[in-house]
Image 1 (cartoon, helix red, strand yellow):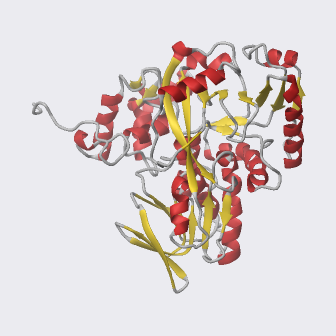
Image 2 (tube, one colour):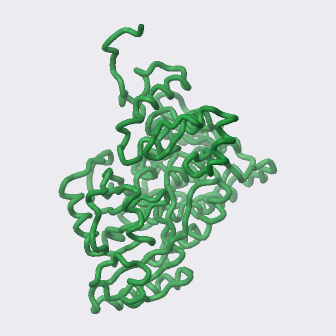
Image 3 (cartoon, helix red, strand yellow):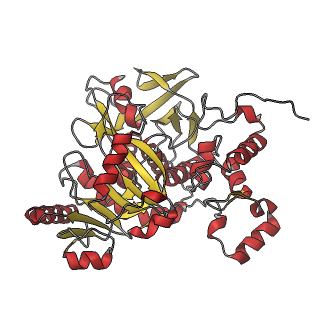
Length: 478
């Protein structure tokens, strides 16, 4: 029996696992997919929000700023990319300037540092490509950007190396409480646990509703994005927001931590929690709205579009803690924006609940640091020569767009909780993410996956399940 079982291996579940492994606890993470970070954590803007647009009395307001302030140390310890680039909230009508003052005051109540109201002249000095009709902006220097899936992988690897057990392809079918413990039923096995933490993202309501009469409803809120080539990455230097609405923070324009340009998302409430379709109308909407923020959207540099789903709850706040009728069952539900920014603080918040219940000893062997995959594209020529002399695989470039070597792909597959699919390799290395969008390197990576996993190329999938890349041979091997 486990002391703690976490359902869901997204950024929230992995943040909780990493915090809890600082104690002597038997911890398990159940994930229905084949890898960590395959839900909301893989498809969002990657913004580490400053915290000015969350109500001070809400959990979002209390945890956003605390989480934001954790990122510098966390990124150093776990070796994932994070940049504190700042953000601007643009106003286009003088009648709305008071809203910037309200956001500034709210941010200050939340503890956000450095907030300023800027004149149009100062805005243009900082961001020359902002449209000329801007009349003012709120500047938040503490806002940042990170890679959400690299962060999730880093948290998971560090938790795993500190003793957390991960069980993949374990979809929870039912949960029962019997004699002071929970029995979590999956098709593959039953898992017994003293404490259960519900970090199931879009499906957190279904998990909660298995054990509690305090029902939760999660609405999938779709957001579509456009991703542009690195050639467009310098159009803005900071994250550019427009004044938020009741549906969210609106369409943003931002550089990514890897140097691309990202525009989106819109906000459309759905019923289908698996609907990740993009639409012509949705993409046109976000591109049109982006034209209000920057002068010329670089349509010619558009390389991809994608959709993410946000877990929107009816109370419009995070749902964290035990239901009245389910002691030992702890929700981390309704974690939409600023969920990524708040993730480190949510992990600490839930850790305190668990520690108060189980009173475990500290883990004196906890190792806080994790080293990521060596990035060939970021090395000097001398470093490359030295590495290739030791590991010739680093001298073979597989993904030309992103300069990803065979050595990096091999490491992504063979490291803790390694990649088992094309998407797993992509999220760990950026192979397949460049301008050609996998047009040239897919077949080579399929071969490497088959070789390193000792499987047939016919068994290699894009994202697990039945997403096989190759379905049959058209000729026998000679």
